[in-house]
Image (cartoon, rainbow, N blue to C red; front, side, top):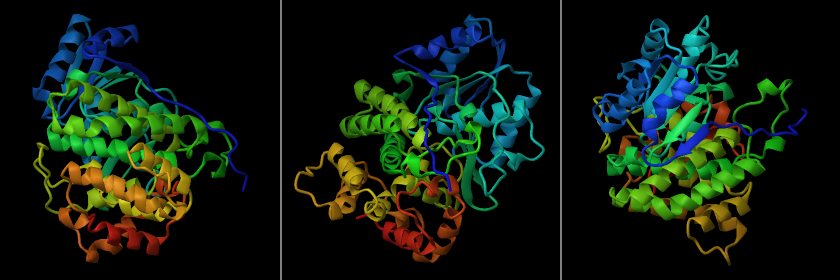
Amino acid sequence: MTTESAFELATSNIRFGPGVTREAGMDLGDLGVRRAMVLTDPGIAKLPPLAAVKESLENSGIEYAVFDRVRVEPSRDSFLEAIRFASDGGFDGFVAVGGGSTIDTAKAANLYATYPPEDFFDYVNAPLGKGMPVPGPLKPLVAIPTTAGTGSETTGISIFDMVEKRIKTGIAHRRLKPTLGLLDPENTRTLPAQVAASTGLDVLSHAIESYTAIPFEKRPKPERPILRPAYQGSNPISDVWALEALRMVARYLARAVEDPGDDEARGQMLLASSYAGMGFGNAGVHLPHGMSYPVSGMVRKFQPEGYEVDHPMIPHGYSVILSSPAVFRFTSAACPERHLKAAEILGVDVGRAKLEDAGEILADAVTEFMQRLKLPNGLRAVGYASDDIPQLVNGTMPQHRVTKLSPRPAGEDDLAKIFEEAMKAW
């Protein structure tokens, strides 16, 4: 096998500042957009961020139609509904106003309406789909996040729930990246505390996972540059973004959750989300995310505080962070120095720490955040038991896009042990 010798940085343009939402219309006009599809979810549809976007489009003379039926934690069916709306609407541009679910739905609507495939799964990541690359440039997409977590405004990733298999998967390609991300701190003021906690812990895990992912030079070299995956493995550029995002999480996450009126903390977490997105959007994430997809997909009854949903749901940030301490105990043997560095940034004194203790030290640091932010105490607290582990493992194994980035390879027995350890966090 010829190993990789290059890495690539690809990310969206980002603009940060209070009130930048109101610049969306001018940006779309400059991009040549005359008719835009505006995507949002039913909750955001009633809030100021969407009103500001609509006013901006009207002031710039841009026609638009609002699709306000985005599903929080989207499914294939909810994607298909948005794709039909996009295909029938004659749009030459897209605006996503909401969290990662909305931005991911907009990416899919843009792709499938612009280059309709023969089968929905043609673009879906292998082995669940064919993993076909995006054939060409997409239409302009302006992403306006209202949560500080997924970093979807910077990435070429679009995640959805395969209800029939009770797992999550997605589509990944650089051309899916939004044209522009507008980061407006005013848009996160109404974010409920537990939503801020969940999305913020997703940022934390993004940063650690991308920093500890397998190095890019250990990955197979593709035959052509276009086949180089969006998730390339850790590299010198992604490391910079990941570590800075982690520093910001350490300083601002608890403040942003505990005091919704702390505009500085909310704004800095919005930036941290994009920083982490630039890191993991190029390096990738690994086992916590791979394991999170069946955790979210197999949900039975759990409904989280702060989310306006009419269906059982384990928020993405919960599903990721609940297994993270157990994962880091497992992966630390592969790169203990990096695990210790992450713990140090989170506030741990590692001056006399032993390398063999790196995983436990980092796991404890992550667990302290979970406790302070009042997260459920492990997978058992969101409805799982040891009897579910075989199915959770089966749902993780096909997630090659992320599991193969683990610095330490994990087989079925390894995953089973990690899931068992994650049943109770403390």
